Amino acid sequence: MMRCNLRPFAIIILVAALFASCASPEKARYFNGVTEGQFNTNYNAPDPVIQKGDILSITVSSLNPEASKIFNAPITNVPSSNTVSSISEVTGYLVGPDGKITFPVLGDVTAEGLTKKQLTDHIKNDLLEKKLLVDPIVTIRIMNFRVTVLGEVGRPGVVNVPNEKISILEAVGFAGDMTLYAKRDNVLLIREENGKKITRRLNLNNDDIFRSPYFYLKSNDIVYVEANKSKVQSTARSNQLLPIIISGLAFVAIILDRVINE
Image (cartoon, rainbow, N blue to C red; front, side, top):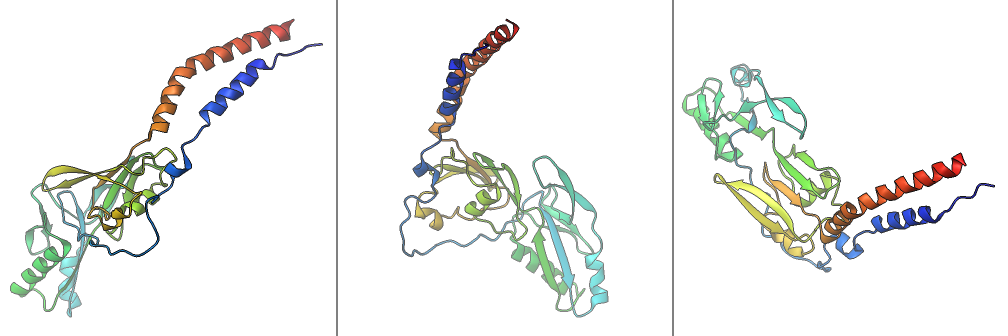
């Protein structure tokens, strides 16, 4: 009668259990330091500032629809990176390397560094001063408003924001939430301001995040969620034990082969 030693399998099961160990539940929760009550927030979502490479949707209307048509002519599609791995076509005015857009009749218009309201007022005033339209209404949207979430989240990648307003919590939610190994008290925010990259560390376990000027994200912000020590140690342990496991499995395979052939 053929008998098989189960000890190697028991060892494999123990090793698998070792790898299945997870992070502390306390570290996997948001807002551990937040208590019940009310607090005032000091910051609202910032009005987006137009940058080079932005794609703007601009529509103009007035009491004379026929006169407004020329300012709403079809615009050539421009490429926009909507996800990490794909490029799509978006209809709009591309802010060029010189910070300008080319607008019908008005020609080159400086857009870089202006908020949507400032650019709206500028175009509206130009239309009035040149007597092109009476009481024009100008509406502007940023078509490629997006943020990037990387690191210990369920679905790292680019998050598109159609309404041009998103908090860091919403961005993490769109990215599939943080994993159990995420370091929630030390999230890195990378932002470009005045031509320079700035970094800020944010603690999602403290209610100060709701009062932070970085609670609401800006277009092209990058959020990086670091791995905690449990993930780092687990990875290091995996690298050390993997050769042993492979050797053990090979040994078991040889023993089984001999037992079967006997």
